[in-house]
Amino acid sequence: MPLSEHEQRLLEQIERALVDDDPKFASTVRTGDRRQKARRKLQIGIGLVLVGLVVLVVGALEFWPLGVLGFLVMFAGAVLGILSYKNATGAVSPGAAPGPAGGSTAVGGKGPKARRQPLKNRLEERFRRRYDQ
Image (cartoon, rainbow, N blue to C red; front, top):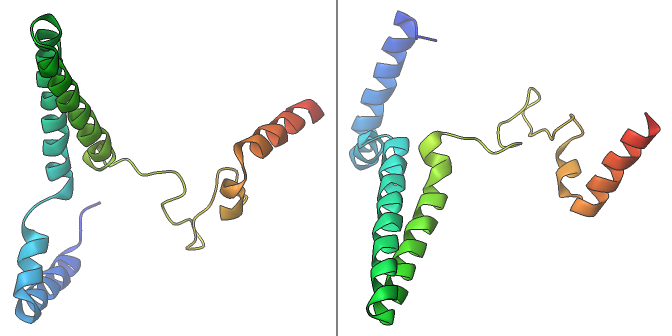
């Protein structure tokens, strides 16, 4: 939803005040979109996986230490891609966004403590609910 003219003017005033108060912080915040940086890391990770796969295959056929190096490069690329995937896509983990009351809510509206139960207890509870229906 676009901002009204009044809201845009207020935002510009706030930005100017921020630049005046702390120019270093303002330049850091203004440098770019975090999603764009995360997308770039994701692309680098995918590239590393592909390069590592090629080096792994060549190393497996020719010289085994090269294959080990290829595996390590491929593994590093996969880790980089996995760690930056959530930020690159803008995905929000369940329960991270505040609910209407300001706190996080679990699935089903049971509150945040429902998420802390062990998996076994949650599965048993789900089975009991299905069986009772």
